Image (cartoon, rainbow, N blue to C red; front, side, top):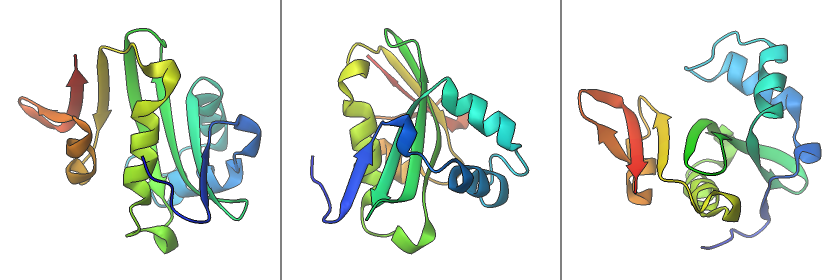
Length: 138
């Protein structure tokens, strides 16, 4: 795994910029338009969260809903537009699937309309008859 200069990924919930995450999810993400701040905060509270930072400022996010034993749902993955096309989304997802607390999982699941190319190199494959859904089974 590589680490881009000046960027950091952390699972420390105290580092998360909840305002930024809520703003992106409610105003920019196609999958959660208008989502309330309360729902975003509750979803973060009950997930393993990955913040992507540059110079202390959050520029990306991913969250994993998991039982830490067999299953994970990857959700709310984003990198702010000014930081895209640098391989950061790939690095973020490599970090997510390599997390030591998730190494026993047998099944990972996610849904995407347009990012199949990001997830496929990590082992995700489309689910038959449901091209929006992708899975890793092992």
